[in-house]
Length: 391
Image (cartoon, rainbow, N blue to C red):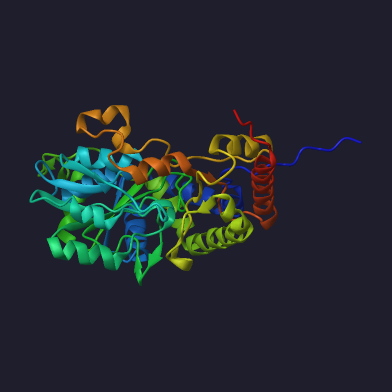
């Protein structure tokens, strides 16, 4: 009797959220086609206002992508040449590129191995007279502690600029991502919790003047057509079509985030028995405020199976995984000129060798979670039972 292969579990499946909205999405696209305002149209202005408000910010400025939201947002906040910006070493390279494109000097610091978030004690130790900004990354959907951030920024008179690319509507200590500092950057890459049908980003701020500057910078440095006031301007505008689709999806985001959080709870329960075998989920210090853009575990040295072998076991069962991120920014070949060496940030470097991102998306079923947990449990226990050759 032949057994059919298990259906497997994709890393991300957006069909659950898109299928019910397909008719509305097509209608929103058709409305933009009819109106013909494809660049900086009405839908962009509407989405900027609603998304900023949802994030607890006063103003939103739609950009072409999240990287531009960091680069142009920092410029709008007055950060540039000669200014040091502190950021974690374990982030996506876009955070670093944004700082460098603003003309500022990136200063890396280490992370907390349990939460993977920036270690604010090492951040404080890295402050010099040239430090102008703290750039916390709300990694995997969990915010860095707003209270701790604000206390540190106030002690040293620093700007807080949030990288909230993975943290749409995340909450902690009564704050929403995007409402803590002088500015924040979001990405609407398709797989994000709020994703466009292509690239897109947004800079949010509480200050009108900073928002005005950002609007000029994204549009060739022009406050109005053919009148250019900002030398550092470029062309980075959120498409009207994308804004229309994002506006349509925004009202559902809260429920989608709760679905992710519930799935994470199922993972936590299912994987709890593997803690003594060295499989440790990244710690959630935010309860339901963690929106789980990614669900990440650490395959620590205490585990009888290494990360690659575990990934291969999951892959053999049709379960897709990822690593966010396998090489810390300071060790990327493109940025060796910054002068950092291996060993500079031991927590970030160790973490990059341990982390494994499991399938996570809204609408994931408990059966799918059980499947992932079962394959991991079997692989770990099987490895533990294998005799070790003594040489």
